[in-house]
Length: 525
Image (cartoon, rainbow, N blue to C red; front, side, top):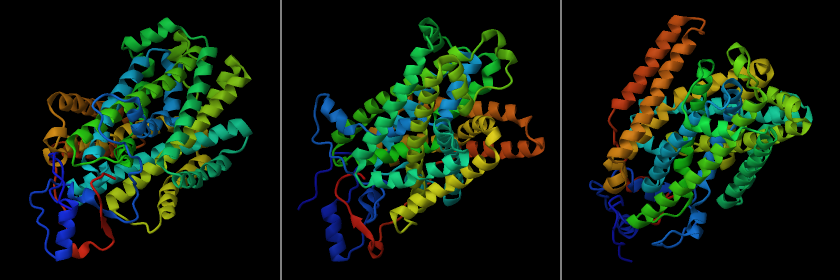
């Protein structure tokens, strides 16, 4: 069969048939003209972590709802990170501390998250590799290790919130101790492994059902609280940050945009078959994934907004907001709702929290797998080993929190949201640099002027917020000098990866190393 005609500027110049001929002839491969990062999209371990299961069909010149449905799924799985227990706690505390005043910030954070998630999806679609794999290729080993460490810290931090948040929901519903709920939450590993066996579409349907359940629970509570519609609109349109809610505002940003979610989204889009020999097909995939991500994050915003509104109604008192020393947490929230909206609201809250915790722990497990094997390759011989190890990394610290720090979990949740914000630049900056690179994305799909200016402005805004957070929490550290040293090292590293050019080192395909790999067809994934 003759090689297919290349119609995209990002397609490897080694096509399947010609590569087969070279292998059979025992010749060396000349990949000197091949765009970096893309030859390896055709070479993968036999035990694949990501399968391109969903056939999106032929290219259609006009918009098609049926086509959109084929691309629907990855964005909704991605949006679960915007609905995890850490976000719910940030929402309820912002509503309790500032009323409707921070609704605009929640909206802007979702819009910023959407722009970044679109870049993440484009990265996976065009290159056929997710963020962890690309960082491994385009950054030196020491820098990659540091970036991986930041990502793992972020994953562990969010998993603590998700696992303990689920345990809190179980305690509200059934009265079980937190440590028991934490162990029961660990069982979702087996649920996740079972769902994976039924294919990605079943997995996506399960998570979308959990999102729908969250929406129903929290919107019922919002209507029960009899919100002020005019106040909601004002809070969404007029940017104000009350002096008593500055920390909650910054923590909200850290809770909404999570570092490991960029890795997750860039990998999930690879579950759709995408013909890399067709520039039009890649454009179609980017178009529909952008629409789907917009729909998913719009739903996420509506759910988060409902929680802010509920606690603005049932807890916030403008005249006393500055005198508040403690704010309700995930468990206290049930008591607040019971006193104001009745006993049924308590169980609606717990059911929504349980859905948020279960869905986010499973997607966190999935993100942990992509991160681990993206940075270090195929280090697990069986898939259940991979799931068990990545789950255990988060389960151990969560158990310690459930056993020894349960009385301080609400305060800890705020600190963990801040931690997410500090880790975010270490995922955001690489994806901005990768998607702006002609070498990685090709001329057609790399980010150009306006897109680059907007996304880099977002990155520097986040870095500025991190500097602000550092100043706030510096005074609370037991040793201020250790804080200064850690802060200097952190900001120096962030500045370093901003100015660091992509390495571009590429492993050369070696015929002698083809054992254990297979040559793939012209599809990503």
